[in-house]
Amino acid sequence: MSSILTNTSAMSALQTLRSINNSMETTQDRISSGMRVGAAKDNAAYWSIATTMRSDNAALSAVQDALGLGAAKVDTAYAGVNAAIDVVKEIKAKLVTATEQGVDKVKVQEEIKQLQEQLKSIGAGASFNGENWLAGDPSGSTVVTGFVRGGDGTVKVTTAEYEGEALFGAYDPTDGSVDDSAGILANVFAIELDGTEDDGDMATHLDTVESALKSMQTVGSTLGSLSKRISLQEDFAQKLSDAIDKGVGRLVDADMNEESTRLKALQTQQQLAIQSLSIANSNSQNILSLFR
Picture (cartoon, rainbow, N blue to C red):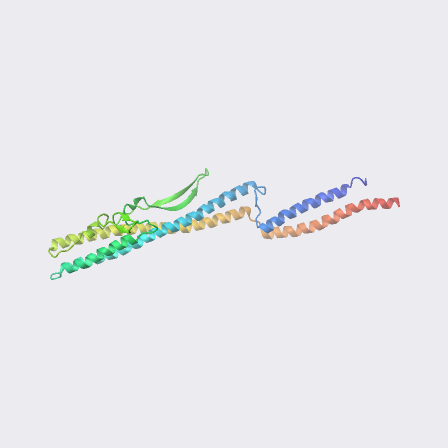
């Protein structure tokens, strides 16, 4: 039945055109933003997951910064230990020289004194941002190593603790000095030749220095192990961040090849729908011809 009051064909064609236009709008939004899920209305589950993972990735970025800071602390302390070991080796060599007959031990002591002062300079200089792991009690020092989200949604920051011994006593950040009466090197600083030492005294001094060297090597090994862990964790954090980015991309990123193909098809459908609506609207004009 043909009616001039109700054009069902035009209504159907208009509904089809509206649907196509809505689909085109969605496709154009995806192409312009590059995202298939840009808001919760697009896909609430994927949007929620992506938002959480982006938040975790931001936390991982902060962890990477913290790892860099921790690495700087460890590297500073490690450099200080290595330098101190070299100086103590020199002191050991001076003591060996002083055991020879006819050597002026007082003159050797002058050299040892300078080396001891150099140790103090190393201890005071091995400070990063006011923190000195070679002095005082460094056992409570920690570095951030990661960010973890549990299966129940709880989050926590993981840390690694430095458990090495101090080469020196307390560190005074005000004047940058260290206490040479405590720590691994306290006995080394107590060595003072006055020329009256016999072979037994020299052997005791050498044992003192050798013991200090072994303890310093242990500290260096501990720092080296921690530095390696931080390096591995930095690499893992970067790979984990990349993996999260890829995972989020799979959930919410638009396939541009697919979207561009869909847009072409929708543009063709739109043209056909407009033509169909035009034909449906012309039916009323055809009814007038019956009355001519």
